[in-house]
Length: 334
Image 1: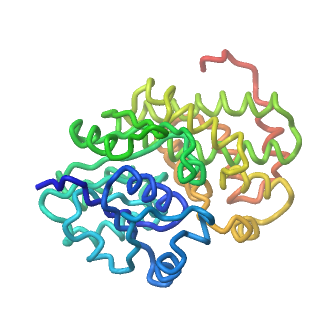
Image 2: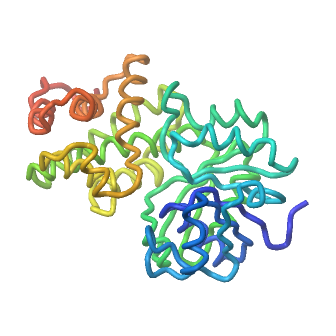
């Protein structure tokens, strides 16, 4: 039975989870924002997420809580916003807590670390045939929290569920479209993070705007090759969750993945860069998983391959970019 004001449990109190919780609460939902036990007292005391979104006051309808069972109990929708590596274990934990009619969606971007599976596959294995959905698109948490105009796509195994979640999110400054291409949305969201690291490397080495534009364009071609092979649809990769998200993360320094690339170009280690960025950098893990998936499927992904070699085999970033420029001539459509 649905409440007049939906009860939504947002699991993950990082910048993106907090921003979505703020948006949903402003839209009239009763929002429970769950985070780690050591995080929540500060959120309650300060009335804001001072670590990740300082200066953004929580709406009255947003309730931070550290008790996971209490957060999930009786919720109409559970929205998971934890790093992709934590996704399977969290779903296994909450599965017994979910009500019969509770639906689940996520805004995490990545693939399952060990198997390379889509998060939707993981969710279906754990939750069975419960409606599930994913939210993706060109979004920076700070801009969403500040009410700046933003657009995303919501895809689900159920059209009714996709439209309902889109309705929860939709507002005067936040446009949410619905889709049934749950595969395409996930691949676009995971693979663009790898391209953003590559773009950060190229810009950090001062290769210029021409190189960045070429990298984004050829990066999209790689994402589409992988996505179509895995069952996604071409129009999804030309939309918000594909080209839109790719352009955003490759061109703006609010992107953690782009900043990782900039740090690597400056000679810093992955660990140094992570410490400076202070949050999860999904593209590091995604590069390994997607490189492996491309090899498994026999798909050529040269930008992904060079990012993988820099991250995992110590290739000099300058040589990585140079190797892309020196590839043999071929038709653009290949």
